[in-house]
Length: 178
Image 1 (cartoon, rainbow, N blue to C red):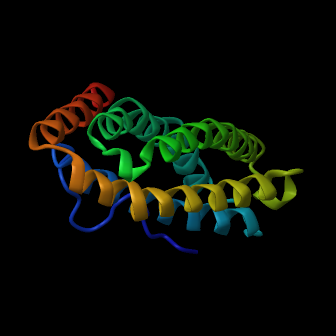
Image 2 (image 1 turned 180 degrees about the vertical axis):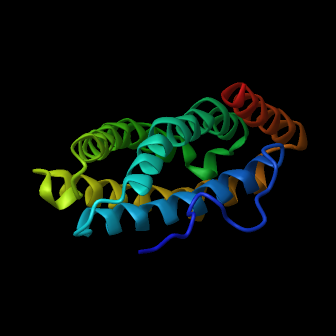
Image 3 (image 1 turned 60 degrees about the vertical axis):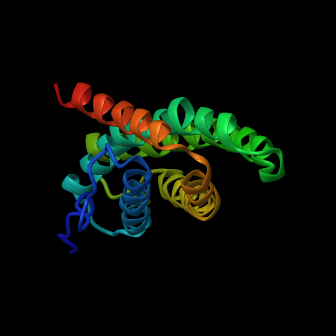
C-alpha cells in the first residue's frame, strides 16, 4: 500500500505568492488525481485515503476554484490585451469549472459511500468510473491553466494585482483554518 501523503509537496510557497501558490496547488491536485485512479481500481478499502480525498474535494478544491473564479480570472480579464484572446478561454474555463464541480460532487459521493459502507470503490456501482472521469477532467483543466493562464498572468498582471490576489488567497486560507 502507498502510504505517501500526497497533500504535502516540496517547497510549498506562501499564498501571498499567488501564481506560484496556484501552480503548487495544481501539483497537489495532479497527485490527488493519481490517488483517485489508484482507489478507483483498488481491491481493498483504504479508509484514510478515501476520507482524505473526500475532504480535499469538499474543502481545498472548492476553495481553489473560488480563488480562480473570483480572483485570478477577473484580473486576467482586466489586464489582458485584445491580442491575448483570453475572454473566450476564461468563459470556457468558467463553464468547465461548473461541469467539474458536478464531476467532483459525484466523485465525493462515491468516496463517502465507500467510507460509509467500508467497501473498495470497484464494489460500488459507478464509483470507479466517477473517480476516473474526475481525474481525467482535472488533469485536462490543469494542463490548460498551467500551460496558458498562469504564464499569461505572469506576463500581464501588475505587481499590485499580485499583491491583492495573494492577500485574497491568504485571507481565504486563514478563514478556513480558523
